[in-house]
Length: 294
Image 1 (cartoon, rainbow, N blue to C red):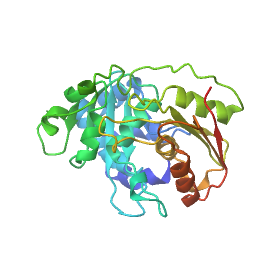
Image 2: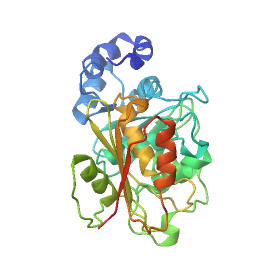
Image 3: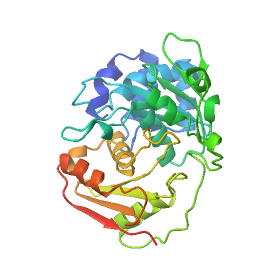
Image 4: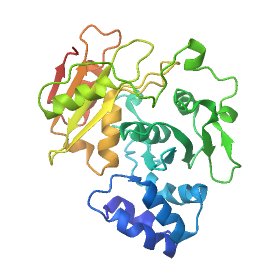
């Protein structure tokens, strides 16, 4: 089991510990549960979907990287596939506050990067801020997305975001988590291909500034992230943050990135290079290559 989970795991009821131990102890555990694992844990613990998500929140919060606030927030995204995806807030010393990732963004993006087609519910241990409410409104689940909070009755995103403004108001047909293919040419080495593939499925219907980032960890593992635009613009999530989120949730240290590739058009209406370079520099990585889109 990754050391970050040990304290939270120790607080779990015995039946839940017994069910989770082989999952958390697996060498390839990357902070999500498959439908089969969810079914097994529910059967062994006697918890339903909502109760299980609440029980897992401390484990999700244990994945937080919060050197600035020292305030860990956890989130769980339940996909229509039955998968449960962990999410946690991320902060970066030496970078601007705009580069941080909120827990709800983390869980949503985690599900997206794992190929989830739609979300049914988000469970979080603190009330979603306005930034996250707007970010989640970009989803193809829309305002029907269920939001679960401790001590609160079940509610929808629409309850937390009344009179919502989002992509549907702008007649955007392709929503976040929809399957997209921008027909980009995929070439180069494995890391470059991963960045291009991430750009190829990025969500940028407002600027068409497709972009993706791929990161190589110290052990050679590759983690790629896609750009996610938002109808309100500011809640958009850069591709670097999507990749860092995946890397961190998989148990890797963001301070040990060896190499990074950014794929974007040099004349795009939104340019990621400067912010990507600055944030990577704050994380101790100066090895960034930019490749153009074809």
